[in-house]
Image 1 (cartoon, rainbow, N blue to C red):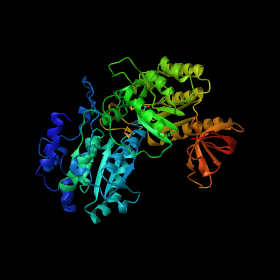
Image 2: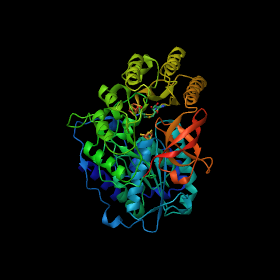
Image 3: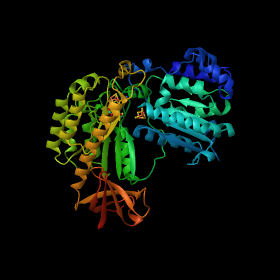
Image 4: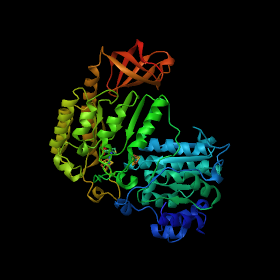
Length: 525
Ligand code: SAH
Ligand code: SF4
Ligand code: F3S
C-alpha cells in the first residue's frame, strides 16, 4: 500500500460518518436525489476517493512491486472460528481464481465454506462488469439478499470484483443498497482480513477500491476448487484498451508474474497430482513485456512443457501479440494442448479498427494459416461481438464469412453492450436491438452447425478424456474433456475420476460427445 492509499483507507476507517447501513426507506428516497459528490461527502470525509475510471486508465511507468510477505493480522487469525462464508462468483476465470484466493484467506481466518445463504456469516459477491446483463444479475442478487441481511444484522454482505471498480456501481450501492457492509476492489483482495474487521466493528459501510493498478502479492493462500484442474495466473490486467471493453479499467495495467514464481507454482501443482493447468491472463500473449528480462509466453510455455503435468492450456490469446516463437513452442505438442482460443470480435477490418483491436481481417487469417501449418489438428475457438455501433449488414456478413473461413469449432457470441467510461460508450448505440438479436441468431446458427460438424468427425474415434466427475444431468454417467476441449459423457467406475482414460465415441451431438470407456487406463496415479 502506498502512502496515499494508506491515508485514504485510514480516513474511511476513522471517518465519523453517519450509519449508512441503518438508513430508513424514507431517507433512501432523499438519498436518491443526491449527486455522487454529495453522497460521498455525506458518508465519508471529503478526502475519501471513490473509484475513478479516468484514473484507472492511467498507466504509470513505475515497476511493479512484488510481495512475498502476505500475512493475516494477528487479531484476525481466528476471527472466523465457528463461522461460515459463501462466495458467489460471476464472470471469467480470473474471477473464479480470485474466489479461490478469497476462500484461502477466509479459511486461514478460521471460516468454513457453505453453499447455504442461511448458514453464512459472510457473503461475498465477486462480480463481473463486462456487459450490462452481468451487472443486472448482481443487482438482482443484492436485492434477494436484503431480507436475509435485515433478519441477520451480523451477516457481513460484501461486493467485490470488477463491478466494485466502477464509480457508478459504488454510488448506486450507497444510494439504493445501503445495507451492504463492504465494497472492495480487484486490487484490494489481500486486504480482506482488515476490511472484514472494519465491517464487523465499524458502523459505516466499508469501501476500499484502489483505482490504480495493484502490486503483485505472491504468497496469498488459495483453496482451489477441485484437485484435478487448476488455474495459474501468469499476469494481471490489460493494456489493450479495446474501445468497448471495461477490463483495462477494472483490472489495471499489465503486470507479469516472474517466471520462476509461475514455474514453482506449476511444479507444486504437478507434485500435488493435478492433471491440468490453465495459464490465465486477459491477454496472455503480452506476457513478459513488462519484465526487465527478454522473456515471453513462448519461453514460459517451453519451460512448462518440461514439467510433468499432463495438460497445459492458456487463455486468453490476443491475435496481435501471438508470435512465431509461441507457435513454434506449441507445435512441440506433448502437454501443450492444441486448442487455441483466439478472440476475433469481428470479421470486418473497419469494425476491428474502431474497436482498436490493432489487426485486420487479413492479419487474423494470416495468423490462422500460420497456426494451422504448424499445428494441422489445432482446434480454434473465438469470441465475437455483434451490433457494435455503426456495424452495417455487409460488415456483419464479413463476420459470418470469417467464421466459415476459419472453421471455428465453437464461439462465445455477444450483443454489444455499452460500458460507461469506455470510448465506444460515447458513440451512439445505433443498431436496433431487433437487428442485433437477428444477427446474433444467424451467427449462433452458423456456429452451432460448425460445432456439430466438428463433433461428427469424432464418431468411432478413440479420444483421451480427463475424467472430472459425474455428469451434471445423470450421476450414473461420468464426464470430462478431451485434449481439444470437447465434453464427453460415458459410463465407467467412479474410481477413474481424476484419471486420463481412453473413450471410444459412439454418438455425437452439437456440443457434446457420448462414448464408451476403452478398458485400459492411460495414466494412473
Ligand atoms: N481478454 C479477452 C476477453 C475478455 S472479455 C480478449 O481480449 O479476448 C470476454 C469477451 O467479452 C470479449 O472477448 C468480448 O467478445 C466480450 N466483450 C467485452 N466487452 C464487451 C462489451 N462491451 N459488449 C459485448 N461483449 C463484450
Ligand atoms: Fe478487453 Fe481487449 Fe483487453 Fe481483451 S484485450 S480484456 S477485449 S481490452
Ligand atoms: Fe468480467 Fe472482470 Fe472477467 S469484467 S469478464 S470478471 S475481468
